[in-house]
Image 1 (cartoon, rainbow, N blue to C red):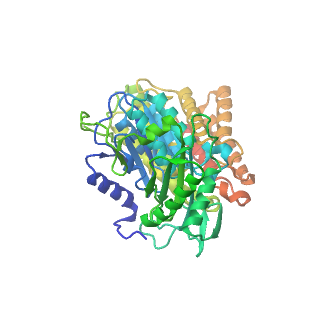
Image 2 (cartoon, rainbow, N blue to C red; image 1 turned 180 degrees about the vertical axis):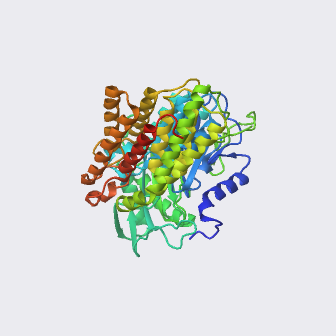
Image 3 (tube, rainbow, N blue to C red; image 1 turned 90 degrees about the vertical axis):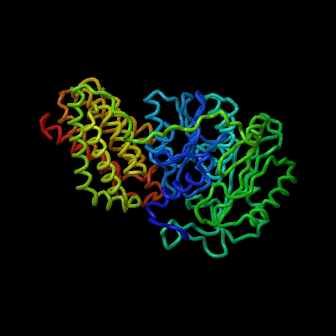
Length: 578
């Protein structure tokens, strides 16, 4: 259990604040994370690495010269919001672009992706690297589709060293992907972890057994088998990882490897050393040379009992960067020369940016947008219980709450921006940030991205008409599809959004009646959403249910249709509706 807790809901932020206070020579607090305490050298790419809290020293512990420039930190086992990622990246970036690095999990893909969309819209070059080292989570031929576990350390260490050595953004991205493609991990767990304030573990492994390949958030493993000795477990891990060893003598690989034996939180260092002794023996027996091994807690899972083995199949370039100096609170090797780097003078804080000047015509549009968002807020609140009840069948029951929180946050942010004189584009971008941050989860990221993309159809220096509204809706839906990666038939919001988009364009082209076009499109979206009851989910939260998801519409598709219908009703009231 977690013994030292104030408010469990504030545990992650309390821990982050204390961490920053303990390491002022390395890090400074930013919105939702930390950045280096010194400014990024001008023109140097910023490596921004992150994920959920509960995994320390990943990710905040790796911020410093030779590794990360910043780390957004989400709640326990939850992705940081797009706003948190954006704020840390904006604070760290100094003219060289950004590499966003994270483990390959759906929430991280969406929220980091949404932040990247916003940064790119502002002219910042952004690259995304998803670590995918866990061999238990997918086949070898789809390595980049696997999830990321302790290999995060190796990939980010190597990428950070390349940047420190002078790599530009293209080169940093290349090296990071090269490191990822050379990295393999395999783990076991003996007992689950307990969230702060909880009286029971998230899951249990049967007594006397171990879960093979169980994920760092408790994701199911490959199988459960009788508990083995330390040597037997080491053999299991070595055999699993070396099954994907590349051919020696090709592509610069000559049998030299970086190795990490990683503890997940409860297995102590002496136990890890026992395992590493056998690992080292086995690797030597295979003719492999170990380069600078690491044994300890590097990617944890609160108090989960378990461990993992990570191996990087090195060539000369990867080995050079693996051995290069780094100076972070949790990982040190040598010491880069940073004496001439100026102290950080500030960080990005959401909502405190200057509001761009806006023309009166755009401010008039802002008023309509604000009222529309308030309509969506009221609609989501009205249907919160219904959406939650539906989601309790197809997911974890929080979709109604997420939609209520997201619309409320968006409306509040839009109101604050409007009161500061913002134009239509700025209001929607800030509303999108707030929706994603307040709602969290997949739907929060997608709706936040939709509002941000919709803002691009407006201009703070000009008014807007029905054509711009249609363009904004289309841009928002396109962002949902692009960021979420779902296709029709996957049983997601896309199953309602794409029919809505098609009918909207068709009806508006025929009549130029915006409100009627949206109403008709919403009706089509509602039919499509209800038809998802006959689909077996292939993506999203219902994917794990398989055929059990049959008979229940997708909550995201249904809520999309309900909100679009409410938008149509609002627009039908005419320009004087407030």
